[in-house]
Length: 170
Image 1 (cartoon, rainbow, N blue to C red):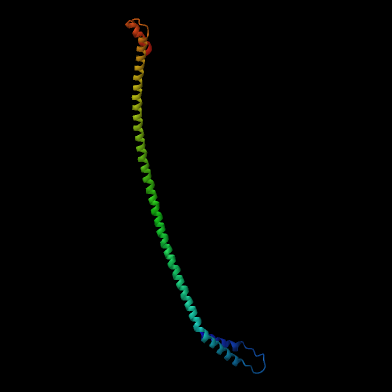
Image 2 (image 1 turned 180 degrees about the horizontal axis):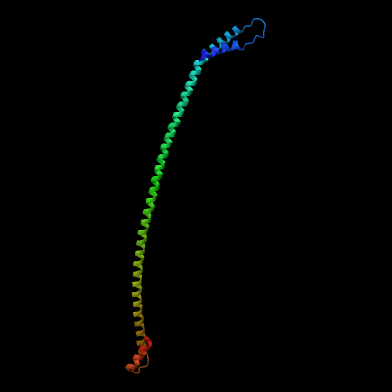
């Protein structure tokens, strides 16, 4: 490649040179000097430039590999995270279903306990009502008896006594 470039420069120098000047020109010496200068620069700079660009290419390739590895890791982490999210959603659904079942069971237990408590309270109320009714009858009878005993010492016949008792009971 470099030989073709040098040959092209040499040919272009002769082809583009003008013959405007009269006399001898030093174009050949200048061309040879240029070629020597270009060759010397090529000799001194070519190898370090090749090494620099080769090392730079390797560094870029290494960085690209690191980025691709990080990308693969992030894709794997994303897949794991999505899997965990789907598992968490399934767990949440199962938990919601289980909590609804437990809620239903607890609600049924509470309702049955309330029903039994209401029955007990109703029985207690009936028992207390019967007890109070008996107490009231006993009090009325005691009052009637005490009234009759407190009244004059007249002798009451049975009918009069029954009438007094019936009045108080009614």
